[in-house]
Length: 504
Image (spheres, rainbow, N blue to C red):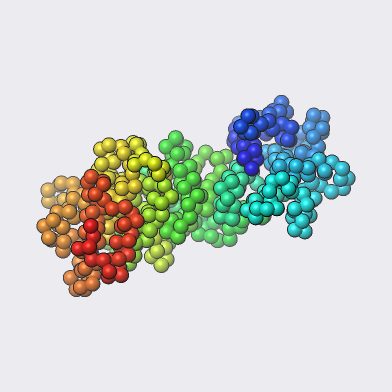
């Protein structure tokens, strides 16, 4: 598995730079002392002109050197002289056959009429794959190994598909193999590399009226994705007419690329009902970065609680939003991830007003054995933990602070930061809310439209949530509860079993 991934990495890198290896076979794959693969034998490689697409096809005569390794050569190249990166993909498919069987490519040399792809396909179709798999891999005694090897066999078959346009490119192959290594092959099947032309069609050429939101990273567009082609067995099929949200990054600079890769790494590893789902990304062949997510139709929490023309959310809906956001953050923290940009505009609401936490471009991992991660302060100032801003030390408790600000927003419908018109002074919601709490004037903080004055139960719940928010924004950070404690408290408040006097 690791050898296959190493080879795919090397070929994906070559193709990204416009180079076709043109001679992939098992004897050109060397192994170092750690069994890491080193791709060799580049003397027959071809460099595509700068103005030619990586996937372009040209017609050339077959090399006599290549004829020696005919089992690995794309039949389309043999019969028509069609040269493209998909020739390497075919050869890689044969190498995959070598890796799973230890004999298939050699065995095929004695077959006069049947191609290696047909031989593999017949065994898959007849559910007789065990006849060609190497028993030394342990597939007979381990069901998971058998599942992964079956998926690799199907990938090999796709790589050897005919015509060559039906084959995945090496980026897609690499993504699939990485998914297998993480033992998430079933989930990752839905993750795909989207073609730039399809993304343009989905957004009607990125029409301005399709913009759902904008930020420092770029813009998010609404799209109706129409699948131009599907790769059978491996990549899964997205239904025609799928609604998607497409994040278009401003540029290919280092910070943008880092955020782009960060989101992919986190959302491909973590799956939760309260985290937004990532469908895939754009290919690196086009000089822009795109991420494709599930479309979440009810927009952001900020839009609902600050938008003047939108009907305000009732209190119980707000409390459920708080609970589901806390659930998502507790899950992230249990998974070793600090979100670093928790705010109302990164909390999306679906058609049932259930939460989908989004935007993981700034997220960081925190190992269990450390108390914080030192990094340059990043995030949105109005929500940022003051200790993190001053020291550059971010921790799970930094997310707790930001969540406390969100709780104050849900209670008050006020933004996290505003400017006092009469005096022109900047006002931060946490400081404003703390003053109201300490002066026993909570009523001046609470949105009058949520029933604080007219419903005793709402009064008690809002008061308890305000006390919890107060604890979340305390300094030093050691005084703040963990997200797990926050979640337990919110659930208790909703059930009526945990009043504000019990929060310690």
